[in-house]
Image 1 (cartoon, rainbow, N blue to C red):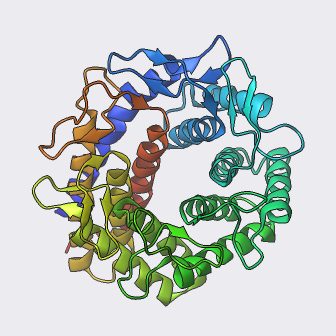
Image 2 (cartoon, helix red, strand yellow):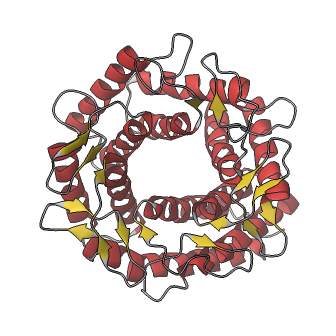
Length: 396
């Protein structure tokens, strides 16, 4: 039974997360002297002192908040409070936009607008508010930030600019994470602005980001949201095919949009059929615009997105055969993800595997930012397994 296999894989992942990864990153991964988070751990598990980015603080807040909801309750709340204190001290003051990068001592290194950092700060605040009865103060600060972004950096058509004055190319990826944040806030807040943001970005994806010829999601655009056709910006990333599919499934189900669900199925198929190496059974890094292989190495994060897309497809399946097939692909994705955790430091991981399926670079540090991907994949698997198992859909 493929659903049972996925349940078994989930339990292994959850055990590793609770017993190894979270203790490591709540311990060695925190800089208690400054109140921040280390961005990387060496292959020996030693923290590397680098500038601190808002996106990493936000991702760690999300990871610990979500881990608490999964049952890692002992120190989750304390770690969320620790992360929030750092976020509000250095990156998100009572007024103004997100400060993207500071030194360990809090010295500001960048003040310019960064859409990606804003997306993750909003996402982290939604994760916290969702577990704290909406937290009116956090909800108000998030709405203030959203509105300031819209007024200061809104694109004249739709979406967001990368900078003012304009900086090109425009990018789909930050919009994807804003979509993620808006959907998270929609589940927590009655503020209509979040639904409006989610709808805007979903429509942009369907109308602009997805290539009508191949059905693949594109990454880089000119100022009028036309896809750039010249390398290297014509890249197609299998990980993002899976990630957009997962989000469009959520949105399509909420809005009763068959076109979004169809696009999600196509994106998942592209990711699986064109973006997964048949020998290693791992998602590759990059494809060309014609969906031929560009970069055949295997980063960690695309494996998490593959797992999320197939777990979601399992719960959305219309018949037992499709459900079992999606569950089988999700279980394979989980097994692939676990290969990255075969690391000399328990709770750490390799960021890349090579063509031979072994660690690509034994000197490469583990990135704190990857914990977000891992926790999100495990949490999504838990949610979708519960949906399938709760209504007795585990037998074909």
